[in-house]
Image (cartoon, rainbow, N blue to C red; front, side, top):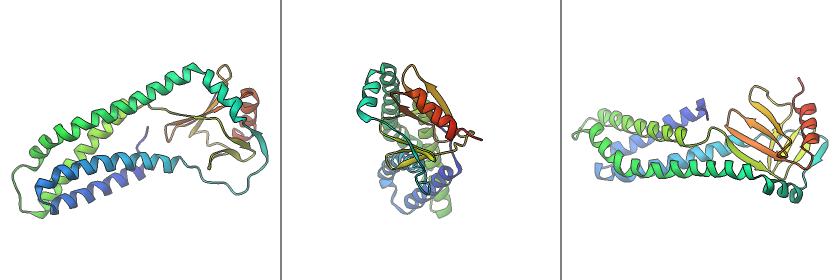
Length: 227
């Protein structure tokens, strides 16, 4: 999981916005603002990842080289017991992060806010700076928890997809060919019946299950890994 420039800019904007709101609001409303900030942070981070994971639709569709048989592929997925262990670990990470966030918001942050904000100040700039420090600390703690509890690689099993000469289409999204080999890692696992395309930038691993993973890999190798 990486912090890119867009995420940093968005975080700075949100810290500034909430600091301005807190500066003008009476201090007794601070806890409400902190709760809103915490939930807004969670929603925005998850939304950003979904938006950035949507690959740009290429011009034209090229030649369809392979279509998955969803029913057959689903049977392969259901037989992959290791996948369920991996997804269980992934779900636990999400749950731990969510649970750990609650005491931080309701117990740690009120104490921290008293320490950072101190006595009542009248200067607008001083209040704004103190709130900026408070929300920066809050963001750092929540992001640190996210790094610790969340898996570095988020698994996305895919059962319905089409492989075209210009890329792989799944749902309304695309992974375009040729692959950026500095960003994407192709990991075949013929024993378990999938080809994994790991997006190192987004930290997401797309598992394309297939009844003929050898054929799928040869197509990806020919069209996706060409220089």
